[in-house]
Image (cartoon, rainbow, N blue to C red; front, side, top):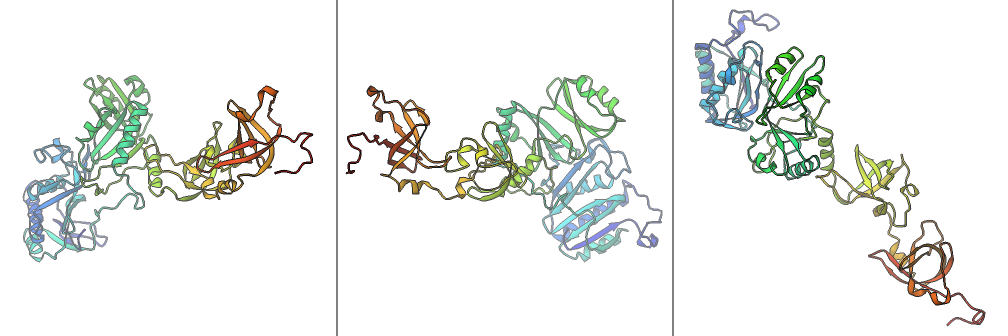
Length: 501
């Protein structure tokens, strides 16, 4: 709210008891007449004093019941003829002229089931609250507007703040924007699942549903309401009988229906409405049930549409899913960053999984050590704390490969300094093009290749795994991590004792 905040009501402050409760005779519902017009005239006076000619809709809500429970909602919730693309035109960030803003205030005063904040940057704001309490904020004192309000028979009072100021559900939560990474992940997810559902919430409690395939994502995207909250769901729909059988004995649920024209809608109901709603949708081709309780039946991931310039100005938040929390964590990582984690699992196929701040990253066998590794358990164990380097941050598949060897000194340059040395070591493997010999006296010692051309098969020269041979290091390719060896012939009786060249 701007700094000058006023509560404007039809209730005389003199008619309040010591607890602040109103004791007068004024009705708490709209009179649809002179008092209502006085409220609207007061709003007009303040907009003129603030120099405001348009208002921005913020955090709009459409509900199937009156927000404050005093009057039944009306058809169209008071939005009829106000928006060309109704009801989706009633969205966060929509800029409306003062005349439309006044009609929205009228709908809120009448408690028609519509509510929103109306703002003009930091210059002006208007909130409608319980029992026709109106809160106006301005960046100017607006003495003329205050006098006009009193002349209309209303009572303005200066406050420090509006009780309907926006406050995020979780100030620490970083909302995921529907940016390029989001759409790329959605394409990937649709490919994996073959089809997913996109829930588009353009106003509180008002949504449209879209079945997405990889072929229609961009078409659906182009028709979404600005600043909509998006939720990506796996296939929710099954046959109607199964959906009805899945209804709980009690509680609040969302029932998702698909009609014969493949149009998808949803309704939030409790156990008292189950029978009526299922009868109403008896002709549906498919249905699904989603719990409305926090932490249950979460979508795959969520986001909020940014504005056309890429800035996320919508203030409302989605309920974070595990994937959303992973996304927020991944945004803090960068390639080359050193992280600490705990080994949680060593998979049978050789990948090591590491918990880094609640996210599971992975280490492939080649990244465990600069030296040869037969199995990850030769290097790490479950529960062990390790320090590793981030090799990549894949925001699409939500994968983070790590490297243990990257934070350790590379021994290969030292191996390259051994070219020309003659060493003895066991044969570790025989391959079609030669055999490998370990050139260090350790289990994970480096191995080099002796090419088949070094064997004299005509003389019956045969090499077996485990044979200890003398070899010479003739080349070390540090880039490709390869060592070339040459076999040194065993000394014969004729040469024994003779000096070497």
